[in-house]
Length: 162
Image (cartoon, rainbow, N blue to C red; front, top):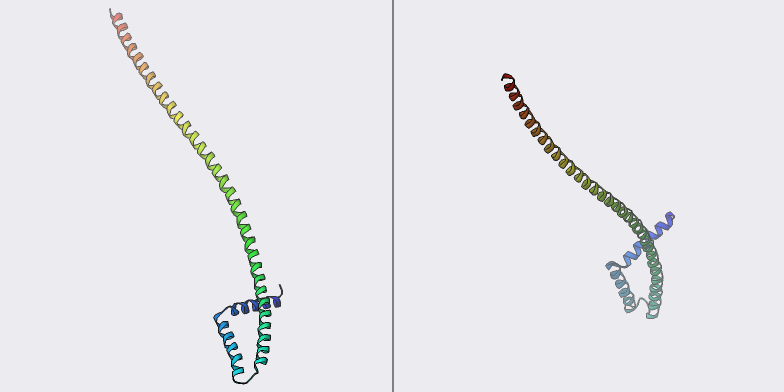
């Protein structure tokens, strides 16, 4: 859009905003009162006043409709830009959702791995307990054998002495 078109568009938007303001209502009311008052004070004839007033109001209506259409066009362009932004945001949200789903899958896999590791640790602990019990049993057996051997040695010593 050229600079001149942009300036014209800004002017049209300002006029459209102003026409919808309380100041515009007040000004138009004063102009209509002045038009009819000019007839009452004899400045203009009633026919001439109606001709001028009708012409001015018709021209104003034509320009206002053009300005309003320009405003609608600008708003439409703005809405289309917003729509594109919304579409892009939706695409980003979809991508983020896919990433979240993948992360959830990874978390599920990690939880399964942790569960398996916990089972392995539990099995290792049970194996260690079994090993400890086996070692204690072996130790007791060795102590029993050692005691029996000592008794046997004492008996052999006594037999030698006899």
